[in-house]
Length: 456
Figure (cartoon, rainbow, N blue to C red):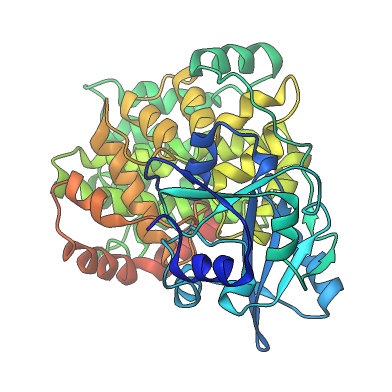
């Protein structure tokens, strides 16, 4: 069936004319929009909200993002986005992530952004992952009859079809147009030390002890309940030799030192507090995944720790736009991060280079900083579902870690992921998820405390 059953029944009952657009099966509506070749502004999306009075739908253009303050002003209600599970209870005949923007077919009240009513046909989800629906202006008015209208979105500048840039072009433009932060001197020295196979724990400890703040953070890490070391730890060298090991100390020190290159606010959904929490959880999960995936534990930890540096670079270069992105993230927790980045950064002669996404930007920065190839690839490709290629295991471990972290509300990639294909690709079974979640629960308090200390 090309359309969801209830949507098709509603169209037939109301005599609403529509045109089906069959498409190849895709993973989400973002992919369907891209595959169509049509401008994003031609598409409508449905945002689902709920409060104690019940659920409602807001219909708006695909290239816009919901302004919850505007919705509250219009309705007098403090509505919050539905979770994916709540949405599927209401739209049980639809594929996940493909909610049609026709609330009347599902008995939901509808708010409509004032920009929706206009000339020309619109495209939208038909409720399935293999078809879109086109409605002309008259059919759209019928489908949304009775909807309350207002100014409900944070508006983009309109999306146009642009030639895709290669990563090489993006890297070249980044270096020419913007003053990219160099890797901090201490991070460079740590990186050089780790590349020396003859380096000793004493040399690493002496390098870290040049920096009192870094010393305190490494010591706090070693003394945490993450490792349950029964004795006293009084020096960095003892932390290296007795508790953490050379690689783990080097990697956490490298991450701490590297973050100092960026000036990003602490607070907010994309602030430094959230960054460290996400990074430490992801690094922990990648580290415990590594032995199950025949991967290097140290490299896996570093991939998880540094995979989101692209967000910090975006925040460092464009603080105003980063603040807007953070607000959009909070207002649209079910939207893909990539679609929000497209809205904020996908316009203008210079900023179009950032529409490739923070993952690719982070990968470019890591390459310029000469970090190990698996770290470069994990950062650059962690937003790409179904990745196959160089250092694939490390990319997939980061993706699986992020998918598991969504259940705890950690991280910026809140769009739905199915972890089972990732597990299969890594040679793991669905039953392994319970073990990973138990391990994560065991150390959660310590990771939270460590994240708070690193961002302060």
